[in-house]
Image 1: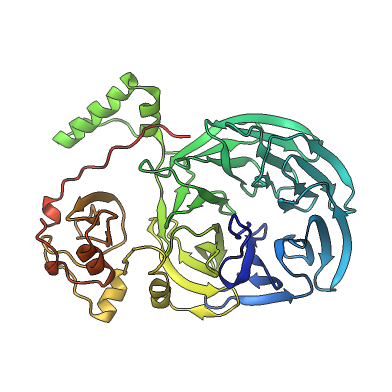
Image 2 (image 1 turned 90 degrees about the vertical axis):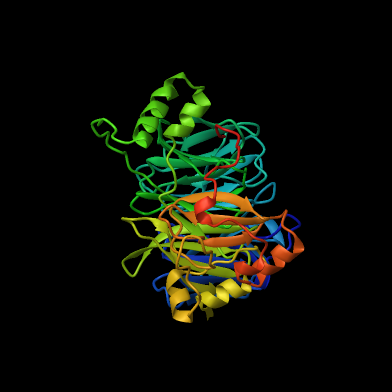
Length: 475
């Protein structure tokens, strides 16, 4: 994806573009000085496969799986597409278009060029233009997705600039396949799974992620990313086995959803007051407004990742590296972050490595230290705390800086401090200053002062488990 700012300026390290290839085995990076390919076969080392410095200001670079075929667009000639054999160092062909090229998508049969109001479909074998979709709704972000499956070779793109319609086009038979009314708000992200039978969508509100069957357009899954705020979704990505779906945004949290149909269990009579309350609550949903009922039925994140930054453009991928599921995040700060994903338990994913996109590597501690200026977040794993001798809370009335993976959050503001508490009974896991906090409190948080130095606050056992009010429904 394009990692440059809206003004066209490059991110850290002169980064302009980053994207994973179709099977998540390599990473392409475009920059002011050219482009590079990195292998994703190892967590410990980011191995550079190739570097080209002949073309400057590379704003799009797309590799076809693990082949030598690469499509390149430069800011110096934004209407010109070059298709090259990078190992031989030869140019296969080039095409010029009527407007700026916003995106290029590849699979083994088709090459798609996306302009703001048109799409060109090429046969990848001889690069001839097979079809042109003209007068599409304005699409300044170049949003589109191409299935990588030969049998289900579909293209998805926005069918409207005002609502979240998805137009699905069959690129083999060159005809429209379906129009899916996915969201009320304009689309922000699209992604096919590897089989080409599922399409994930998100709107500009960013609160709800939906998955549809292709080409039928039936809604299969609906996941709630959050209710507290609208965010900008940066990317959606399926795992290669279509079991997981990741969603990254301009916040510090990446959500991972599990695509499984929950089997209905036979109802049992509740034995506790909470059980009775839950039964009454679920029974009452039939009398509630449809927006409220939908929220009860929406799935929640199976796993989450806490990035050491917020506000950076980024792209995520779910890959299997060294036989272990990983979440990869490439960001405009010039780094690739690698996390472990537990496919059985989910929960908070563990940060394994951070690699600079010039091939060097930094440790986990350096990640948190270098990112402290980006987001007022203080985070430390339980294992790290034990290793470094950090004080661990011994009773629930004492607050510390460490904890266990966050499984279920209850947020409350005390003395201007935001506390995120685990339902497992462990004291605060993360501690960060509220925007309304006093300078004394904010300084204490940033410098990891012990909470005894803050104004008197009740312990976790006294925290009211009340969520803030939120607009129900979704986009």
